[in-house]
Amino acid sequence: MTALDDREKGFEAQFKHGEELRFRIHNRRNKLLGHWAAGLMKLPAPEVEAYVRDVVEAGLSGPGEPVHDRVHDDLHRHGIDLSDHRLQRKMDELLAVAREQVMSETKAA
Image (cartoon, helix red, strand yellow):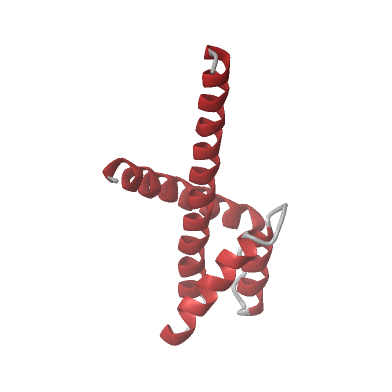
């Protein structure tokens, strides 16, 4: 194996690790967002975890922001008037929290 092959494998491993971290961070953000939205909607305790799972699954459904659309629609259906901008800002805040949590877990492991 040449030095070039070693570098290529190193870059591939680094890319894979970065993608896995991004995936975990976004899933964590979606879970936090689901809990936050469930609280705003005052969902009964037995429904909260199911709702959070639905929000996380929406994040796995494809390109775009299906999580934003899902939560936005759910909030409006429950009579909560929240602008797209405020929801996006909350998602950004929770992304930062999720990144911090996942990174600290990664360092501890």
